[in-house]
Amino acid sequence: MPRIGAEPARRRSLIDAALATIGEHGSLDVSVKEIAGRAGMSPALAFHYFGDKDAIIIHTMRHLLREFSAEATDRLKRASTPRERVDAIIDASFAASQFDRKTIAAWLVFYLHACSSRPAARLFHVYSRRLRSNLVDALRPLVGDREVVAAADTLGALIDGLYVRHALRSGGPDAAEARRACQACLERHLSAYSPGASQ
Amino acid sequence: MPRIGAEPARRRSLIDAALATIGEHGSLDVSVKEIAGRAGMSPALAFHYFGDKDAIIIHTMRHLLREFSAEATDRLKRASTPRERVDAIIDASFAASQFDRKTIAAWLVFYLHACSSRPAARLFHVYSRRLRSNLVDALRPLVGDREVVAAADTLGALIDGLYVRHALRSGGPDAAEARRACQACLERHLSAYSPGASQ
DNA sequence: TTGGTTTGATTGACTCGTCAATCAAAAAAG
DNA sequence: CTTTTTTGATTGACGAGTCAATCAAACCAA
Image 1 (cartoon, each protein chain N blue to C red):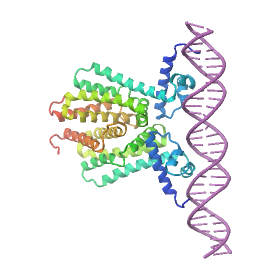
Image 2 (cartoon, each protein chain N blue to C red; image 1 turned 90 degrees about the vertical axis):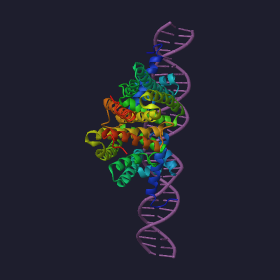
Image 3 (spheres, chains in turn yellow, purple, green, brown; image 1 turned 30 degrees about the vertical axis):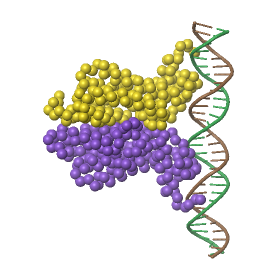
């Protein structure tokens, strides 16, 4: 039953299906047949819309990055103080839309894919630089020029680590625990910078 | 030119080749042909020694875990104070044998594989529990019973995050920076526990 | 009709795993 | 010491199966 003007919905279905399939398999070794089947269409239609499998992968990756980016931007807009800006980034990282096992597994898969694929690496580079600079800007008023880079990189790495552990380790942290760990780490940073000024 | 008694060396070659191949590809989607070729033999010989591809994968994974475990155990034996024991675990994580890009990529691949493979998950579970309990034991005298679990999980996650970033991000931390970040994090923990007692 | 949509069938390439055959060294027999 | 046998090492070729990608044809709305 071909419907006209179905392209955008079809493409979206395929991207969602690709994300779910990749997340479940924990690998890019998924067939177009499985992705298309999950999206309710034949493999040939997937090729019709995307050209080849790599394009499906890249578009899925871009979708994931955009979704996180939107989550972060949205929360940053609502933040007024520096501390709220840092919390916004932390919270975006562990927001429900980003912090379920399949999504994290897919994230990791793309992370790995970026090791051996130039386009994937470029895509990642852009987004991760933007995130880092957001974190640096938010932290600078809190910890000062001298320590801001180290603080941002430590907090960033901690977020990544908690993120990975949630998806891949049984008994890993849930979102609330992860947020708490980040905030505790941040507060130790703050009281090291200006002791006695906590709370 | 078949040499008798070549089995152990052949198996070792195959495992090394598998590790390198998986690390380069950033994926388990590697052919036995490529692994065997890199190890200087025909694919059929790889099947002769290991039975099937899964066995090659599992043995490679076990090899990686064992290597890290040995590195950590070795350093722990040389440590006498609690602080030295924590440093031993940090240093083992960023030791040269564990901290090159290919090895970390392979580690990540196995991490992901454990999501969908029971035997791989079991293997991981054993090792990661042992590592965690080592970290908890070493930290307890330093940060006290109440905070020891949180401290261990935070430090563990930070190690994981730095680890991942080194391999997967351009401009990620090198081993020295990673160690420094962990020790700084630890020291902030310590001075929060007993302020004024640092150095 | 025209043009976007959809699929079944097909192709060529590649992979896992098997098997029979080959080869060299060690062990046993003469 | 020589010859034969056994054993493990090694491979090329093969079969079954899967996958990415293509194509022609069918389908439907405007």
